[in-house]
Image 1 (cartoon, rainbow, N blue to C red):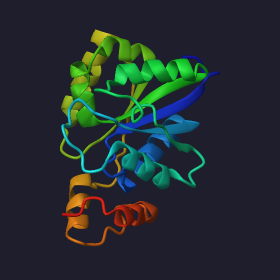
Image 2: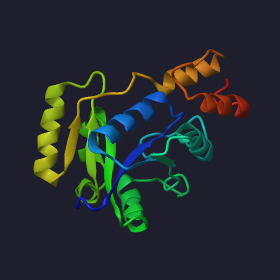
Image 3: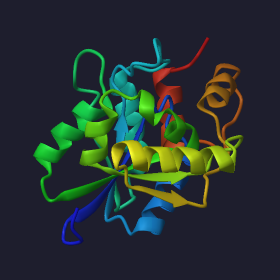
Length: 204
């Protein structure tokens, strides 16, 4: 990946719902690696989650509302619009074909770093993007360093470790609070909460 290419961050997740922690993590990665753009990728049918509270299109709309007004951010429907189980390797190949001018940097937490060997075709994934890894609460530094070395040796992975983490906000906790009619100030962008209330998502 040459320096002349546009640095594009990829922030994947179920975003059920997208919250202020996701935005903070993306911004930290953007600042650390001078990313020119970050694509937020709500997952369509993630292989590791059987059921999500909001529909794929609702999660896409929440993502659009969350990043509206951020000139460096964009909601991307590359996974939401596809049928069947979605794997990162497929998404990366599609995006690489659509945006040949881009050098992709996949933004992950330390817990995901430890799980990378279990992804489908990790070897191919590592040829299609670099990784930006941020700390996550409860993940030991020693394990992160060991995984970092192993991934470089086994797959030639390019990983930038960023000594930052977003606020400790849980989508599960947000869904619980919404179901109980509790406020979510500081956890959700206000337009996202307004959309959830209007659409009656996560209500019991």
